[in-house]
Image 1: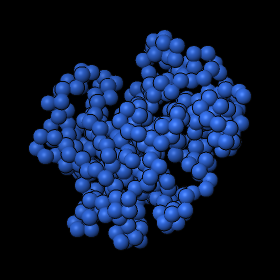
Image 2: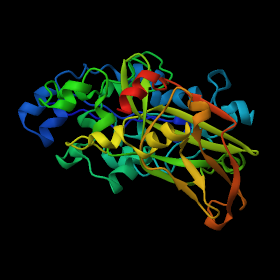
Image 3: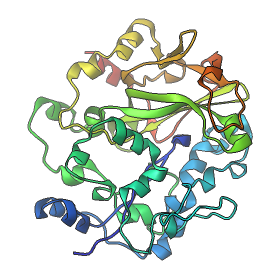
Image 4: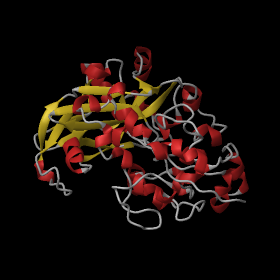
Length: 378
């Protein structure tokens, strides 16, 4: 069987943090890890096109997800910074070295084959994917995953078309048609149980089977603008948002991105697929009686983060995004008083900045409806 390459895709970005695409491969990749039955289950993977023809319009080449989320046109962070993305390093983001170990020159860098391949067409190692997709690296280091436990790597689910493109230009990995990966492509028949019977048609698998979403919190954008340094307060983990993914009719797990610049604060929300999947789904009470839901039913507010006088404290567990999310979500922001050009972060230099976001953005998603909240609270 032929072996084709692939590598981890993500997203995004959500602005940073965050968006992003994973490498794909043909079914033959399973010959290395799994039996013929599992390989056949992935026979849905589309035939590979000539990557030299399709790569220039791929998300790996265009970095369009970053532009989509950041732009003023989409209500992004540029609205507050007034700094065009072309003046930032976002579109030329790269690891320190190419796949063969050669050092990258930021001044001349453009995305290309050697980012991931030592030789054109060779198999890409998962470690290469994780040089860029660091959120996934954090997930691997800190959480279990039922697929990884079986020896599966990025290319077991993500196809060559996702990595190399198909000649079409997508605004984000969340764009319809941008991704091939889907739980249902392999899990064609669900176990017969009450949870599946009730939720199969309206709730996406990740809402129950992803242990957590992780996201960097409070990116200090002055550090990026002045020195190209990605500096954030810390990692928000052990939580998952619940929101509707546009065009699917289903509730998805979601993530958030927060940034500050010039005393202004920003929050972005989006659907997300974490690589922290468990065979056993959430207990009913984790969603239907979460602390965040209880707070909303009592006060009409949902606390995401709170400054306690010395540090930020993050809400954990399942967090539903209500219809009045722009006023209901409560979060605090901090500012960094250290040298923004120093690549080393002094944790004692973070100070309270403000409560509330000056600008909020939600793309590819919608908040839960009143009816959904009623069902959630039963």
